[in-house]
Length: 357
Image 1: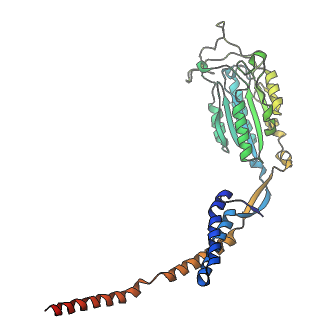
Image 2 (image 1 turned 180 degrees about the vertical axis):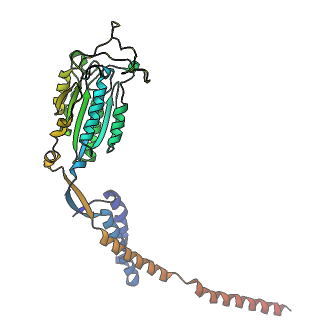
Image 3 (image 1 turned 90 degrees about the horizontal axis):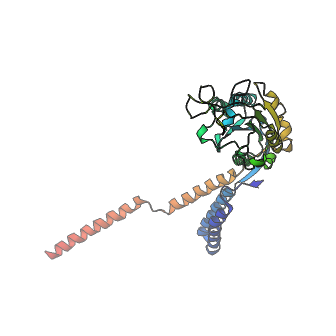
């Protein structure tokens, strides 16, 4: 047996302690029928207090495993992800689109969250069970607008991912959380980009049960089309290539060292994605039963048992209402008295009129 507290304990004490003290004082200071009234009212207060404390019996069940998986997709949308060196001459974002949709299909009953980052990191899709929403986002994702680019920073989504994972852990601590990080690893504007480093993701490792870091691009690199937010620019168009400081088309190359470091910090594997290929192996080792052997599958529910107090409260209130109705004078009983008074008043007026004559 446990108490779930329908209202905060301090509020229960503030409301009911003075009322119960008043009821006890009245019981001690009255006799007869009035004492019975106050005993009944004290019973009403005790029932209300008991319902407010909400006694319950805890019960532990095993949650449905298929709905226990939460997938967090962290997607790099910086200009370098438009480099045309995936599957020959396709943009890296094409590979991200394919893999993101494929992962969703591999885990069709999970919950999904998408975090996108370019010049800033934002939650693009709050946690949802709608796989179609993930597919729609993936099909429409684009690189950032070139003029707004602030460089690549692999640690830019760190704070947003931290907030999302902690929020999920607080809301559903028993769930399994998988993180999939899609990027080329470029870190030209990170917290420690000058020495090739970046802010560590290691503090998030206890919150991550699995996933992968997926790397896109080649060592030779590729050029990137400029993008102004319209359909006439970006990958697949004749828009001019983004240039470097020399005025020549800029070349973006994958940084696998950074991606492997990131994977190690998160405690997940790293995989190089250079062409379309199955992603089933990325989730094949995700054994939810094994991951949740620490007891996280055990979900505690509570069966409230205050209903006897509610029944007793209803009976006491009915008794109180009945007792109060007996004390209310019937309006019909007053009419004869009122009629007699009016009759006597008329007689007095007639008598007074006769004496004046």
